[in-house]
Image (cartoon, rainbow, N blue to C red; front, side, top):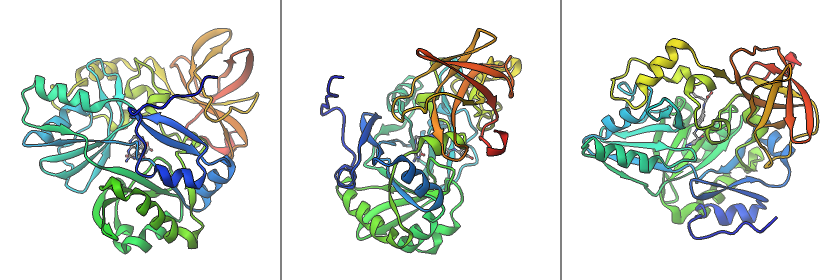
Length: 371
Ligand code: THG
């Protein structure tokens, strides 16, 4: 393997020095930044997340800021979910689609003011897309990337840790809602949010020069609860059915295929990008769906996932888009992107390079008792 070269186009996060000091062993490029993926002990990191509390550098979850008189209109035009009722201090998970109804990002939208929104984006360039749409439609709105870098605190003890820093008001925050805060002169927003199903918060740091200070402060505050470093966790997120847009979708995936139909509102205005295509797809039904797969064979190696062909009765029916060892099921699991002709309970074969292994389609989230 050649060395992976790092140019100045791949920016470090404000927490980079802290994560190196903690012993980060793997980094992944995301939104032209580096996101740590692990600290060398996957099982300990999983247990810390599901039993205690874990802190993650997710500074690569960049914000695309829409500001100006047409900010709300632009946000709505970009998102296939009704945003007419969103209020200041609230966030919503949305699908950003192209005109064919294909998902091109799945951000969290945060409303900061009547004329200011952030899209907290997954790994694709929504900033370019938003600038183009705003200009083509003659909107009065500025699209920019503000100095904002989230730090996630996730796990059953996350609320106690975050409340010990910011006060008990954070306990009242509803899912994806947020409020302004400051600690040691560090400006940030505290949101109940994060890419796990263990509960937790994200601290949207608003001064990148204070990243290491914030990391150390959270680490110190979390000590009584045994906090430690972690990262978006493949086992936990696959067990619980969280979508990784960049990993689990191809260039033709629509929201209905990957369980995001509940976040799509077909009755938004006709000029919302993709909505006309989504109405047509909803009327006929999608061609594929996203079941879980429980499979035999070698344990997938973290960081070496690939899409593998899935066959049923010798005929290709789709792909497996990720794979991991599940500590909960003590089995290999993954997501399929599979023809709707296949159903939960169907026996399939997964073609993992030279190795063909048998598997069965299951519901998501995965349940131990299904095995
Ligand atoms: N936090 C922040 N920004 C982000 C992510 C994040 N940007 C990139 C990526 N993650 C965006 N994708 C997701 C995907 C799923 C969820 C959040 C962000 C999520 N989904 C829950 C679910 O699907 O069950 C809850 C959705 C709901 O009920 O509204 O949490 O993590 N800042």
